[in-house]
Amino acid sequence: MNHKPWYELLFENYAQTYDTEIFTKGTLQEVDFIENEIKSNKNISILDVGCGTGRHAIELAKRGYKVTGIDLSFDQLKAAREKAAKANIEVDFIQMDARDIQLRDKFDLAIMLCEGGFSLMDTDEENFEILKNVVATLKPGGKFIFTTLSVLFPVFNNLKKFHDENMVSGTFENHSFDLMTFRDRNLMEIPDDDGNNRKLDCNERYYAPSEITWLLQTLKMKDIEIWGCETGNFQKKKLAVKDFEMLVISEK
Image 1 (tube, rainbow, N blue to C red):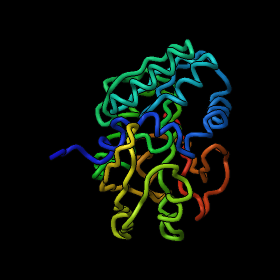
Image 2 (tube, helix red, strand yellow):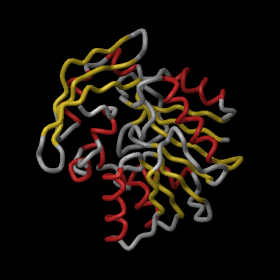
Image 3 (tube, rainbow, N blue to C red):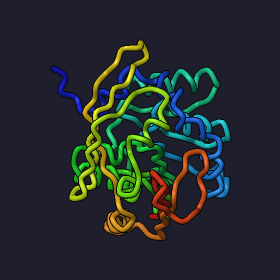
Image 4 (cartoon, rainbow, N blue to C red):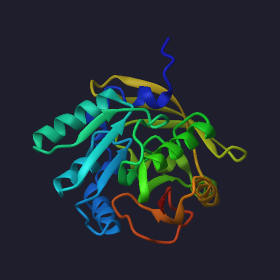
């Protein structure tokens, strides 16, 4: 029996399929937004946490930034390295657990987009470890930009309908959102790159804006901004109940 967590099983032999998903198509605009936040300063070093197949890291490197990408998945990183090599782009891709990042005070910017680990862990403590570890990688004055699931969405909207409309592959059933824990359990059936279906018992944590603010303040982060997030259309807009994700910006 395979005892790996669902989020590890999901990303095994899934790189090609992942890159076909609707939510991966907004990379250029998302990187435009990031560039604007760092005032296009090419002297800064960037960490991409949960970099996956490297779509943000590679695009940033194409624009002249020094980027390190970390991810738990060997398969996703293999695809990222192949894509970078094909584009003749240099990115330092490292297999590493975001709950235990062996990099300290090295980066001017950390990004963690499209649930790059955070909110997928089985416990709130593990999710907090990810935030704590990412913050520790930043130099004083460094920025942290990430997206995470907004609890307003499942309270006011239908999660199954959202997933059905925003995933090319996979089906989602038996959503069970718990108001006491802000966690959604669902059964996801999704094909791998060979077309074999996997059934995964997913467990995702949604967050209230006030929780995110408190967690970051606990880590001594400042100038915390929380905005409504739309993939491929990052902007500073007021968070609304229709926003599946929040866009969070803060400074060390």
